[in-house]
Image (cartoon, rainbow, N blue to C red; front, side):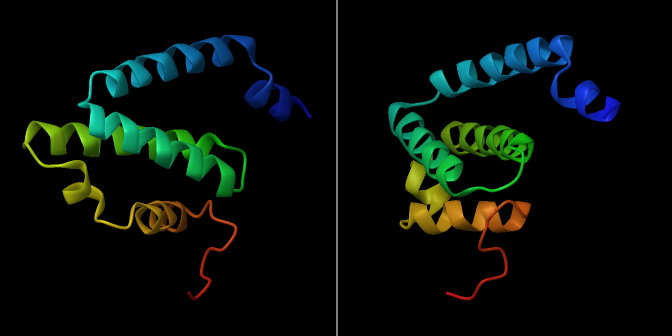
Length: 107
């Protein structure tokens, strides 16, 4: 039980995590408009279809921010980074992180 409280109900950790999340989201706000739009769509899609505690999602978001910053810096359009099928890109992110409820399912 102590592990649960140390990990999930640790107030100091929650505050630090919230500060880190706000820093990351400020990076999203600095992206070009098309990247911000697609990021927010991916974010809402991923939260609707992910399973698990949610901590895995934060890592995916941070990696996605890095990917989008790199794409924007290299003057690529957002769909050059994600491909035309953004939902499929999202689903692959979830599958690769093991947070998808359909992990391993064949389409």
